[in-house]
Image: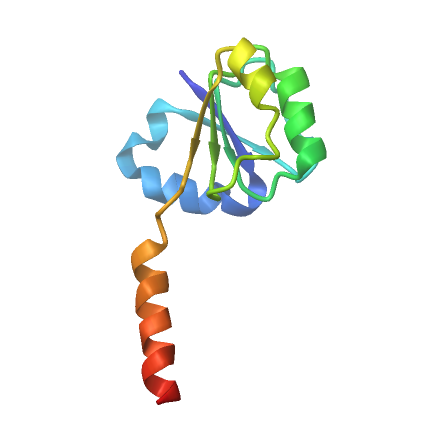
Length: 113
């Protein structure tokens, strides 16, 4: 069963989002420093509220990590060379808020007229 690491603040939301599929993956909760779980079997991580020290802990303690997802668009601060050398796939949420932000900007423009 794949083991996915995520911050404890989103554990319930992710579990709900998985619905019936939740029994096909093991969710592992950590704090912002990456502490609170044995990460040796972790294969994936959703980086949300995991600070830079937490990311470093994850990379140091998760030799089986194969996928890292950033909930934000920017990944410039990630250790891209290390991720590449370890064959870890990095994905992000670029563009996910494009439509809501465009709608919000338009609404603000209309209220300012």
